[in-house]
Image 1 (cartoon, rainbow, N blue to C red):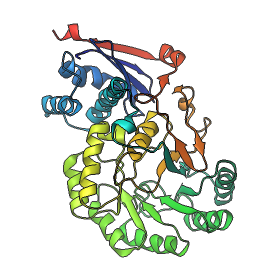
Image 2: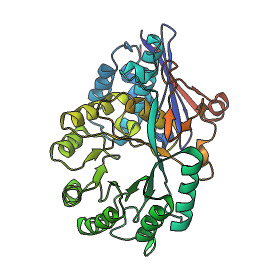
Image 3: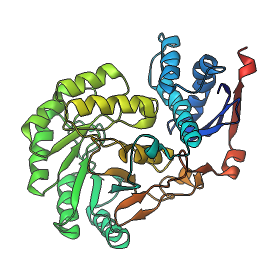
Image 4: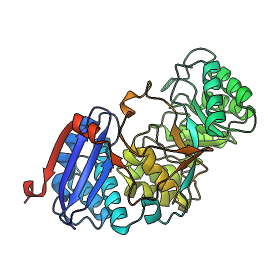
Length: 369
């Protein structure tokens, strides 16, 4: 089963990858979202040339080949591109086995608990609480995450008083029977993060994501050690050296890699194994409704150290218009759980019209041999 072609279908925000074999296999994957047009160039320049003509049987081997051949050019864009190849190969392997990816990984549950995740900082406490309540009543969500502080905010709030107000209002409106999580997106120094963390604990918030700049892991460890709630992080990280340091030195209570930032399923599973050996749960980051959420749900359904729930972005098409009409079938949420298809592979097909309207490139085996 040799890889004979790698195709990309891309716009600025989103990129599908199709891998085909000489035995008629077809697998669909995705590069990382945002600047996906750049990632597509990397697919054809730094990924495809190293794997065309290779057997698609050993995905880990193919990952190793790309990373070793490009060892002089490491970085996030190589990983964002590699995720397209890796996830497409997992689709092929699932289809050949007649199993969904989560079944291929040993998972036997097709329902994954999710938390409703808000991306917005431009929203008042009252408006945020009201829309979260509507989701609770309409779809049965019982866990919610919302934004606090100002992104990379140097101890600043989005506007004065917003963090205290939104935590208080959301708890008041949603009641004590829901789980509340917050995301600071690198907002605070340790002293301020600990101060905010104590306030969060007073309101029963259970999860404090990326309280300090992610490039300051020692700051985050200080916050974790000072608080009783769970401190999480890792969405930006892709370097295994960073992950080893984070896990071995106890930077966080919960690790949160992103499948498409990491370079795909294979490398994400390596992080999950490291976390499992350290008795740490893993809750994957997936902050939009592209295929990254589907990839993450399949992994969460199979990983032995999966956390309590998976992120599910609640923003509508008005906020992320590029999410419109990407693939089918779409996501189904029932009583706060995402329902996974048991069709082989990822169980989806990209929308043909979306593919037709966006930029196309292809690398063939004949280009290399």
